[in-house]
Length: 329
Image (cartoon, rainbow, N blue to C red; front, side):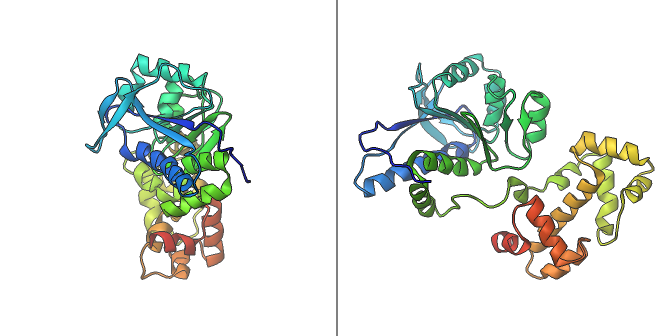
């Protein structure tokens, strides 16, 4: 897609909302993408396409959860037509969710915005403001379950880098705000410009795979003392073996039906899906080591062959084992 933006067009206003204890990269990642697009325009001798502002409830310095503060402007009383709002996430989200003025401002601004976006747990702010009901959204993989539980009218996707649903855009964890912002640059200025911006930033224009390739989802679940933890402990030394649902149920001294029910409650999946995801987690860990061949990884994790391993990686992570190793090995 190629978009031609007239040099006489006014700049697109980008408002990045922060609050005390926001996550620094949630805000500065998108800011840098749009700033780099401005750099690209200056080098081409055309007006800057973006006017970028960090805004907050009271203005002034706002401290991030990393301890670094940023200087902000007080949020505008009325967002300009055609503007884009990006809500950051971070530990301070819980306080933001309880702050009525913040929620009212976000909801009121939405009615005038061209686009309303969130990065990471900023999706909770949009949900609390009533903007996500009936929409498909994404947040950090660690927080997807909580978002779905707290806001049952929202359709939470468990593996995406970013999602557009109408004029609402949500993105996954932290650096996914960069991916989202690049997609907005592509909408505004065209694919060629977005590619140049991505090259300047030394990042993918469209990152392959979903966010699950960066998680240790099952290992996190296994910290609990529930069925998932018990099953993880039993499966870990047996991944090489052929394992059926009946074997798993018998090992945990419960019926197949009960195993399905309990795993569904804890992990949102079936026993077979749980086993596949666990094998993938272990395969990822092995691929990050240089001393294990892809063939050995397939054997040690129970996939049996490189072909089966490639199919599982492509289906669940969006990359093949060799690509995963090249990126994380």
